[in-house]
Length: 464
Image (tube, rainbow, N blue to C red):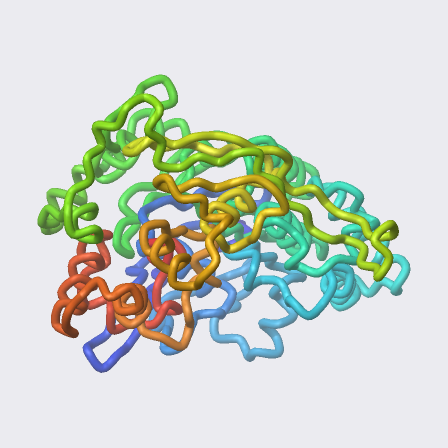
């Protein structure tokens, strides 16, 4: 008998404009000790399946058809009180977004100990020891110290490790992992995948991994289920699906994966989507924003951005006496240059200072020392807010976490229109509407997406 059985699952989101089918008649099984990977583009319905299994569909989402059975017992349609006993204890969930999965008002210790005591019936001291052990397993240094910290004191990758520890601490039968390694660097990703593989091997837990990363699929999954716009288009053993796929969408999806041994001027398109959809009209983003084309014929020493001896310190121990203060050096004498038209990659393990450097360049943080020179102007020496805003218009940041970057009370149209209005990039409301519609079309969401709120999108769609 399979551990988890999904039969004829259909998920719909009714609205005034009609019902949207997010998942259409999906069938699959998960055996004990098996790892199933679910892949597909953002909005394909992958995370919706996980939420439907747990009874956590966002209103007005409904499951009008289908069955969810755990170890032979139907769990779809159970009362909330019974589902709460299943979540965490029998089915663990690793959510895609670590920032919204953790309570910002509680320490990591409080959150882990609470979960452990509810599900494992341990006393306070035993629960704390188990919590420290789980943090150590997921690669958090000095777990006995870091367990006292709050979520905001961790980097994005560190927060994701805490979420993984939180999902594993009650020793569930099934784990649903929604993009579990997205925020982790390669070395820690390997540790987490090894940990998951060991967990499956040692305990016989069944695991579903939802991911965009074909490397993760090939590394850890026994079987793969490929989804496209709510439908399952292909299912089979990992080697068969990745090595010799049958469906045109799967073939295109695999061919679109960038290769490390081959440099390309642009990423290959998923031909199946291009054939099925409407091609986007061309848009010149550079001219769209700046009003005129820039000359990228720069000389060898003509840099657009120059970072010189950049330093950033965060105070860890405060005191009115300077000698007693303690600092964490997050960035230490970093220097580099970026030419016009050049793409610079900044890599390193989580917590190494990558995001801090980006925030320093954009002016979100004020550096302890050093210079950031943009187009000949030293941004660290700017005085007035007007001067800062002029340069901020030309330098924008795409944050790591789309969930906390978007205002949940605003519609997508208003969110995208806000910087256009603030920087006076349009002369009328009709021009603002035209720019927003063009941008939403360009990222594959469509102008109609502007009427929706952020919670109505998948994680990948929010990032767009």
